[in-house]
Amino acid sequence: MGTDVKVVVRLSIEERLQLNVLLNEPRVAKDRVLRIRMLLKADADGPAWSDPQIAEAFDVSSATVARLRHRCVFEGLEAATSRRPPRGTKPRKLDGAAEAHLVAIACSEAPEGAARWTMQMLADKLVELKIVDGISDETVRKTLKKTNSSRGVRRSGSSLRTAMPSSSARWKKC
Image 1: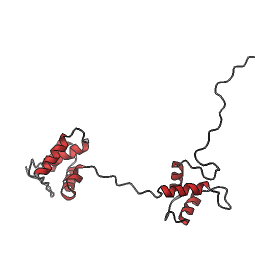
Image 2 (image 1 turned 90 degrees about the horizontal axis):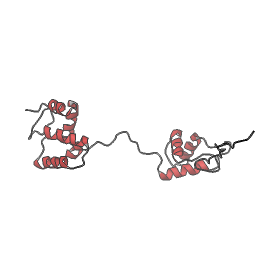
Image 3 (image 1 turned 45 degrees about the vertical axis):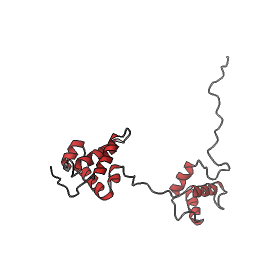
């Protein structure tokens, strides 16, 4: 059975043993086991299955097998068998110190001519103080919401509960 792909996976004896040891461990993620088994079947010095054969046997697409082969050859065995880190995460604009500055500004007196701080005014103040290069008012809002800060009110933090009348009404005699 020949391989009909451009990237050929050749596992050394040590790599094959390493993959078999991983398969026999008691707690291994299902997706990792799947990738390990596909690599063992794709090994040119072993079974040397083609991409369509592997795809059919493991119920994945041929493109998935091709990407796995490519990752194994160009990024290494560990990269091929482990999950990729999520790509969509962005670094936070405000770290702990910047959040503390934001809360301190939000809890301070509002600037002259304004009754209270607006989100845009807080964002502009952070840029003016060179705490951040640029920040949106939405980021300021989310940060203040996360920290339970109330802008422009004398007491900071979450609002106090108002006293509710008792739900058990007293019985009155007519």
